[in-house]
Length: 347
Image: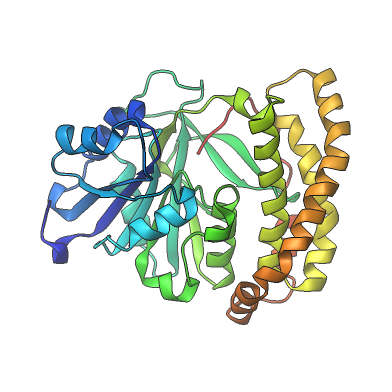
């Protein structure tokens, strides 16, 4: 696509059987308001069986295609794809996203504005779950995702007025990170997670190093997901809820000192139940779900505790390089208000 030495950013799209999204996703990423020779687009295929890799080779010849022989999941798949990146900055972008033309230049501008800013993420769109994707004109409203005091990620509708804001969380569905800090992090996404909360973990680890993660309202990316997927009581839905909850406990354990974690534990436990207030379901259904989540959350916590010893090395590394005080993360969580209920989802 361009000379490796001139590449400012590498944009990685990892996918598994997501052929239906690739035209919109890759097309929008190739149509950025940024010099084409200054960034590369990498499609990493997690052993798809729907012909995605061949489709990309045929329809998008300028895209670098990497084909894995097995499905590594979101975390390890992105880590392996990053090894092929040549850019100073690396973006991890979900296949079911569509980027506004100002997405890449606005993110790069923020990273280049301050050496202490090492990662950033855009506003989430659309607000109506898959409506018309405006990729060139001005946008009025979007969604900012950030951790609440209860340890879960919530979505707040805000005006897209060009504001930036430091966050503890970084949106795994669309982000840009300075590749320079890879050695300090040890890895981008924790491969043991496979999926869920790996982005919360990455955001906390970057903050623990003393750097900033910035939400960029001038950048925007659509994420084509339906809210119902979080509220369906089937085998897949229950497994998802379990992994989300278990990995949330593990994430805070990894990034907190023991006393700090124990003090935060009641908040994190309550977060699994309180998060129901933001889901698109009736009040009676929320009550039923809430009652059921009490033993379910306890079970998830027990399973997290069983797994915690395997994270002792990573936790020692994280806390050994932590730049802030012993209780800074707990204080940061406590200072965050619970956002108002919202019917929107985002990145």
